[in-house]
Amino acid sequence: MSSDRDAARRRAGVLLIITSVLWLYQWLPALAVVAFFVWLLLHDRLEADLGARLRRGWGRVWPPAIIVLVPLLVIGIIAYWVSGAPIDRTILPIGLNVLALGMIACGQWRRLRQRLQNLTP
Image (tube, rainbow, N blue to C red; front, side, top):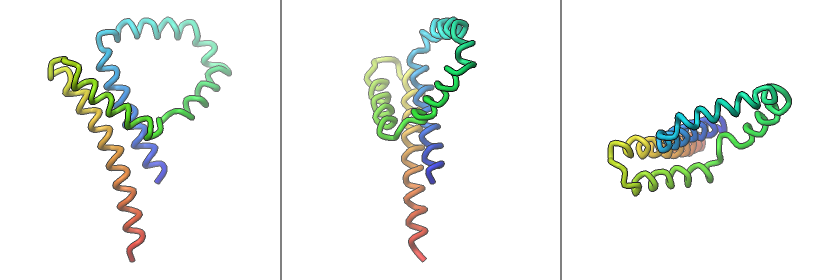
């Protein structure tokens, strides 16, 4: 059951990242160039011991806890809603955040339903 929760949190976290990238789509080319140059400078270190430490650290923080993920998704929905941007630019991020919240909620309901079914003879 814990793997279902982790999978739902992982998918919701990915949707949160996608909606954040949609918010920063104007800056995406600049961010890609900066990321490439950082990779050029650090790729040898990332393939050695530093990379192993980073992977262990990443494994501790990803997927984010529900207590962190849900407020971020709600804040994202509110931020896109009040941004004043045209509806065609905000509907996809809002929809993805709502979908992520739905995946978390459905995962919780599914687990509760399974527990109740296991209790009844």
